[in-house]
Structures are given as structure tokens and as C-alpha cells.
View 1 (tube, protein in one colour):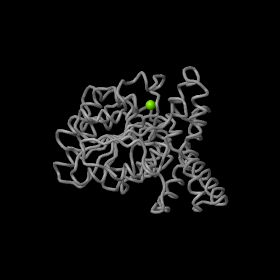
View 2: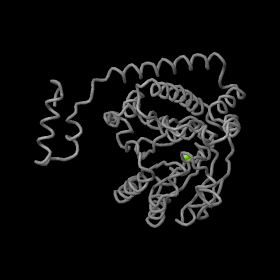
View 3: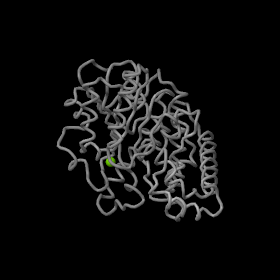
Length: 352
Ligand SMILES: [Mg+2]
């Protein structure tokens, strides 16, 4: 399926066949349905003043779930801000994801004993996480770990220097790095045609001397095929890969955006016809692996899980204000001691 050429291009891989691992695909569908339910609730929480600015993953479910299912426990995940399902599948509880988007850094204190403890928190600056991922991959290689590093970004990030620098060093040093671009065709209000004159984002791998793969990011089985391949290649010392997963951002950029001001309703409507959740559900139904009663039960389960997460999130005690200083330095500088004392007095009797 994949050649050993410096880079290969795959517009689309076979979606489903008789050899498909149906239990894995059902697991994927269940995670996709759950994260869609979560995503809708998160937007509603922001709209009602109970969450900060939130980046929706609507339309990216096959990408973020595919990543979560392809990563192995000993791999490293370096996310950008639409990877809620990957974080969840790595072991981050849904309430902690809400906590982060609610402005509480304790949401990034991933649970010990889960694969997520090896991962980085969300990255808000565009593309800077890719250089950090290259650093982690360098460490993994120097320590002879059979682990892969998966770093993600959006299409807008591919215009940044950090993107090219990371791919370049990954090629030169044969790093166990997979960079996956969620090409959802919009970088806030900038469409793909204004982002790059390159034939595709995957082509950008060529300059770095690594393999580039373009895959239908709305096609969950194809995502698993590509990520299984690229991550396995990395784990076995066979070099880095750039994956361009082509999808469409069905949401606004974030809850602080109104995409109706710059893109056509007809374009959005057409994109909904290709959306990944309904597509996988229909494929499972057609193959006799998913029934209407299962769907009804799972949707009820999703709603219950999300409601529980929201309750847990809303019941968290306020963050201690001294936290903003206590984790910056091993020893707090003298110049900040007075500020800490003031913050401590405002902690209202809570431990500080
Ligand atoms: Mg984008």
C-alpha cells in the first residue's frame, strides 16, 4: 500500500473491506459520538457564561479519535487545541477538558497512571508545539525508546517557521515524529487557497526529505490506516511522516468567532454532507454492525457521561490564587515574595 519512496501521496485509502476490525471501528464510532455530544455541550456552556472561549472539534471527530486509537500507551502526544477526543482517549477525564477551557490550569494536570501523563497540554500559540515535539522525539531517539511522537496542528500552522524547522530537523535526524495537520480548510477567516500555493500540504514534506501522506480526514478507517502506519514506522526507527488529514471546520473557529461573516452557507451545507460521524455510522449500519437500538442506548449514555462531566466541572473548588506563582520556580525569587503574601491573604482561608 505504501512505497518506500521519499514521499508518497495518498488522496484516499480503502475505507472498509471484509478484513476491517469491526470492534475497533465500533469503539471509534462510540468515541466520535461521545465527543460530538461533549462538543455541543461545551459550546452551550460557553454561551451561558460557564466556560471560556472554546475551540470546537465539530467535523474533526475522525481525526481526533483516529489519533487517540492509533497511539500506543508509551507514545507521546503533543496536541493543538481541537484534540479533545485524543486527550480523552489518552485518559484525560472530560471534566478536566472543561476545566482547562474554563481557564483553570488544573485541567492540564493529567492523571498519573494514564498514557496522558506523557503528553503535553494544549498549545495555543500557533505551531510552537511542533518544535517541542521534535525535541521530545530527539530525546526518545537518544534514549533508544521504541516510542513515537504525534504532534498535531491546523492548516494555518503550516505557514509558520516552526512547522518547517520541525520537519527539517525530523528529516535530518530521522526522528520518530509524526506531524498531523488537520486541514479543515480555514485558518480563522483565511481559506486554504490563500494559505499556500503548494499543491497540497502533504507536498511540504518533500523539502524536508520525509514522507508526506494526504488522507481523507472524514474517513475514520482511512485515518486509522495512515496513523497506524506512520506511528509504527516512527517506533521502528524508520523516520518521520507528515500527514495531511483533509476535513472541514463545521464550526466557527472558536466561540469568539462568527464564520457566517466570511464563508458561504452553501459551502458549509456541502461540507455537512461529508461529515465523519454520520458517515461511519452509516457504514457500520450497512455492514450489520450497528443497530437502531444500540444507537439510541449509546446516545443516552453519551448524554449521561457529558452531564456527569459538567457537574464535576462546575463543582470544582476555585483554584488557589497562589498557584499562579508556585509552579513557576523551584525557589520563588525574593521579588515575588510580597505578591505571594498578598495573594495568600486573598485565598480566603484556603490552603495557600
Ligand atoms: Mg484550520
